[in-house]
Length: 352
Image (spheres, rainbow, N blue to C red):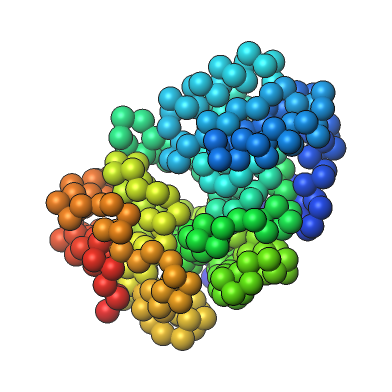
């Protein structure tokens, strides 16, 4: 191999397999912590309280107000709860919203983090924080943001609704798709990206047919771990910029937005990144954009931004925001082309 590249490996500890969530207490103590603030969304408050009860004196309390796109106002409220409870670490139980809140706390006070992942977000293995304030979502990378421990227990995902399973899995796939053409990609992350997408492709098909298939649930967690690890190692491009814009400024749901935009952002970059995208296109038996679009349809995933409540009249503003301070992208980020991409994503049209 004559290619020169740099591969920075993110530190971290992963516990994987059925029943691995029983180790939360031991992991708190292994980190040298004594009082964990358990985080969740309002929908998972009961689960968070049950976890806190199992932790006994190691639990400092429960904060169950995590929200999509990590609003700064919620983070500040959680920090106040952290201090009031005299907590010294956080345990995030849930998906991207809860994981994001734990990261936002850690970025501000450097608290150790344990994540018990219950969706396929993949963000639990990245040093990336996206947070929203005044209608604008911004992202940052910092070692303090990366959780120290991640626990993948497929038993906790058996009750995850199929629709959420599908969209969070497609969200993870988006991490890998962008990873193969990233400016700082390398052979190791590209291998992880293809394997992660393959695992999620097969697992999601099975989960749609048999939601209680434990092996498929485990494979989906494995795939999301790999795809998230890719995102945590290389840079983001147009797809993530678009989704951050649509979520942060137009309040569209995070995973569903990724699922809808992905085929179109992949098709946008395919003319200049065909070689890098070909191993992924081969997984879906078509061009990358059309293949991802048809795959999402086979899973009954949403495929049109208008179905999420976005108005056509908002597309011009979204395009303006998306091309402002753009992320590096293999194809130039041009306003007219981005506006056309958004139009097709809004309509739910199949990528050409």
